[in-house]
Image (cartoon, rainbow, N blue to C red):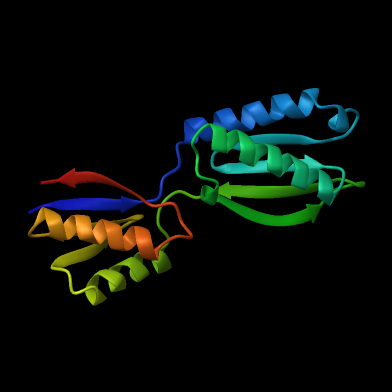
Length: 161
């Protein structure tokens, strides 16, 4: 029976490269000289450190540009709150989304049921597997998901005929 998986996975290698390029630019830019501006990545968390909120915004802007150049969708970034650190420094933690959250998975499952397409959606850990009798139904399901779910960068893989 034909099927495919709906997933939300960032290319973590490209994300890491984007963070490293951002760190290089921070080191060379004149407006960051002599400040505590920095960026680092651990696992799936990017930490921005700066002297003030506006500096974090500038670092975030550079990061978004670098990720866009590397074809990483910026919707993978889940922005955290700005936190005060010791002294006059502030930091912000950005999580890189990986996997479909349960609410979104339920929304996709409900969407498939209401669509009247002859497909079934099954939630499997952090992805949604959609199966159907015909390839055309699966392609219609992909188009429907792309149209209705725009806030998260979803991709489709493991297409079996």
